[in-house]
Each structure stands twice: as structure tokens, then as C-alpha cells.
Length: 257
Image (tube, rainbow, N blue to C red):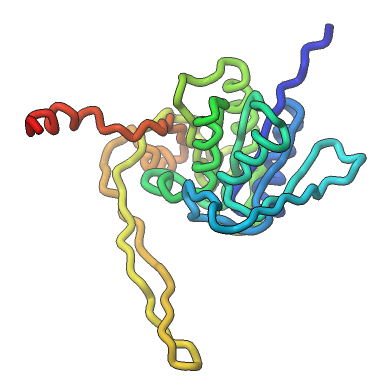
């Protein structure tokens, strides 16, 4: 009997037409049957937001004779995963992959990332999940150099699964294939954004603001994702959605509340 191909859910936060998700679709088709559910427009920086005060729309955009089903969702990346599990698949796929994001999601950026939040939501549902990101914000970024790594990492997760409550945050340096030195298993670097608001005025005299900022790496460790990317390696950080600060519990218990 022929072994059943795994079912892979694909999503992102750059929108369903982004070149990054098209590259991810191409790779995942080699590994299993796929279903694509992604935002109908850019949703970068939405984090783990869900839509509760507005209606949601889901449009099937794949043709009847297409090789896979594809849906555009009016909501956030997390909404897309919820829709896929509850309304389309009506169950759990074997793997969820999110990306490939146009821009890095290393260090503190994992908190804000719609790409990673979609993967985390799938993880909460008990689905092995991976977020993929490339250090290149260009819409026409070249994904060919990293697709062999994407395929290898996804294949490993399909083969072995992941520890319970764990998602992978995978980031790629913007390099040619021959210049990527390898893969490093890393911890998240300690870093912050030094943020400011660029204040301007409309022609009608009303103030408006653009959020801007400078990324600041505060971590000199050579075991971090930032170090790996800076030195030509693919970084893989295992991420968990249990946000309990276990190391602080003894301190708080000392208050004898």
C-alpha cells in the first residue's frame, strides 16, 4: 500500500501574493499535499492578533482543477490558522509552515511577528510548526539560495516531530547559497528596538505619525540567532508559547502573600 502523503498547511503574514509564500508552496509540494490559507493583504507586525470586532471573509482563489486548495482570508495570520483548522481541514494537518517572510524575525522580533504568531497558533493546536524568514525586505528577494534548507528542515520535522509545546523559528542570512556556512541551533538574542515616532502634518494641519526605530543587539553571546546570521549561518531557535517565568516563582513566593 502506498504511504499517504502528509498534509501541510501553509500561511504567512506578507499576504497570499507575496513571493516568499510562493517559494514556500513550491518546496512543500515536494513533501506532501498542501492547503494554503493566507491573508489577502500584508499583515506584518500584527503579532498574535485575532479578529473579534469585525467580520471575516474567506475566499477560495484556486481553480477547481488546481493541484491544491488556496484561500485568501481578510483576517490576521492567526485567523488564517484558526480558519484552516476549524473550517477547511476540519482537523489537524501534519505540519504548518509560515513564511517565507520578507525580513528577519530573529531575537525580539519574534514577539511582533505575524509570521511566527501563525506558527505559534498552530503549535497551540498541537500541530508541528515552523516559521521561516529571510533577512531581505525586498519584495523581489531571491529565495532560491535557501529553499534546500527549507526542504531539509521541514522534512526533519515531518520525520521526527517536535517536543511538545515547541515551534521552530528559522531565519536565513541574505547570502548566496555557496556563502551560507551551515545551520546553528541558537537561543534568542537579547535585543531591543529604540523607537521614535516621526511626527508630520497633513495638508489640513492635522498631526500624524510614522513609527520608526533602530534595532539594538544587546547580546555578545556566540550562541544567539543574531550572531549566527551575522556570521553566515542559518539560525534555528526553538520557541515555546508557555510564557511562565519559572525562575521568578521562588522570588514571588518569598513575598508570603
